[in-house]
Image (tube, rainbow, N blue to C red; front, side):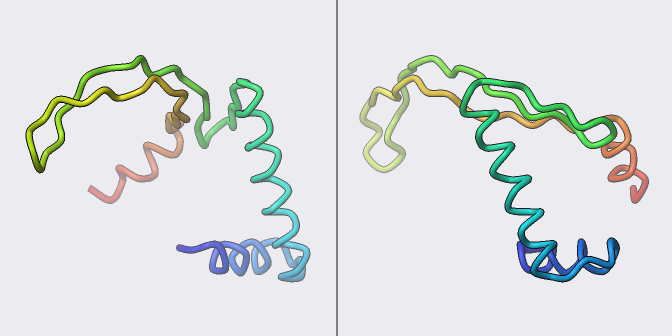
Length: 93
């Protein structure tokens, strides 16, 4: 599902216009973006949680040449699915 399809799904389930649904989705994404940039954790009960973690610098290998390279430290976004989402996904097994 891409962004346009998600907007269509939001519009049909909420009876909002596609334009309003698009603005709501954009506002939600922007709010999540700002919170993660500040280092906050976002928990959505039943869905999951987003958080920021620090990844330390490490050594790696260039797969083409085999030469050792340095991989810089950085922050990464993590998502952990909530029990309800994980259960819904695994029911199809």
